[in-house]
Image 1 (cartoon, one colour):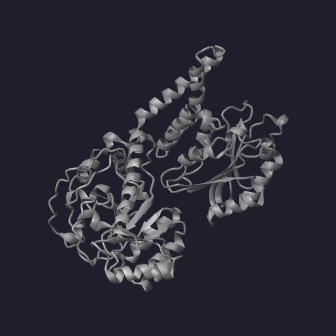
Image 2: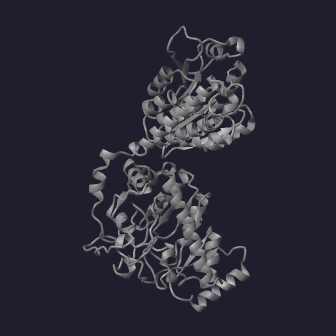
Image 3: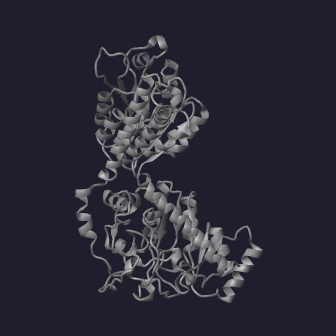
Length: 581
């Protein structure tokens, strides 16, 4: 068993790591992402065996004994499964998890449906036995933090932990957290405890930026609340019985609030008190409620002001400065080249070395900002300032008309063969539904992978491609030859049994290449779905481009429509084939 002294030092190291992250956020606020979700806490029960001074619901509020319903739990797990959640799932919020006999079955269900998630159960240890721990491990438990609420652990509990560590070293995953030392021995300077917005008498050194905006919390009634410190559910952004969890998480209002908090703007009363060193007290709530009456009452007023300060505007000044810096460095590099590099050597070197990373960062952050924007705004960037790095080899009028006119409702399953720089992928994401599956298959660096194929290779493109997806969308990137059996199987697996609404073929432009892509992938399209071919307009046949001949000669089933800006143009043009119902 670790000593109390060792536990304190472990907490101090954790505190140092969190403060280093806090300083990093202060220096680089533009790298923060309000849509990221690392963990989700589920209040499976409010029953607890203790009344700790730093837990207001049990210490002074007498929270009723409630349990999360199976319907609420299954809706949450279903949503996490659909979005292939790979973060942490905490099976507790304001209650002792081991009082719930359903815990093993719920762990097993979560493990089966959300296999990439890390399943974590917090406990105070009062009900922990070796048999219960092994039962939880068998069900799928990954980690068990054990909170110590007394100066020394109970003798029976200590022996249980020692026996588990000795007899099952490969299964042991219990970490002791000394809450008692945090509160009673005045070690609260390591920042672990929280004052719950002034409802708990906790004094600490708060961070400059909130550490809880990347974690979701759902109370036992299914309410998605501001954070796990909102113990009275005063800030409810939706209920999972009414909406899908990710629809609530990615709602513009919730993203707006998290974006503000992530950047250190304490828009809510609970946040101002939580981050205040003086720990001002908040009166205990009064009244009746199914769980607890709210202690804070500024939610509606704050969210009513959202329209005047939309999330799309957040960070725009920095982006403008970054864009200007990239343009300045590019002009400086050009000037250095024109002058035969007769400018000061250090100045020339700095301009050449900084232009690319500054422009890359600008494009990355702009794509993140546009992930919740419309098709037009994204096209303005793809065909404008971002075209050198994330452009689309499309005629803007053609692709925009095609995407707007081909579907009465936004498609929910979309794929492209041929990605190049990824600009078309960004447009497909904006045209698809908010919960769409989008698959992008390409062989980076191949002959038809963009105007300068070798620039589209490398893992450095990954962040740009991931930034294109909308908040609730699932984008799958597959790198490989579209004709290879392995690529077809990866494509099939990504679909998971679904059928595509739209497939855009824009890869190998030879006759055999287009024919092969059509024959291999057309079976993945639903009846009434659309298969689109790019570059159906004649041009560059001497270079082997034969999409036009394929479009005219191959016996394609279904009805056809063409999107061609100018009949006399060389190449470009989109042919849309709608399959029979």
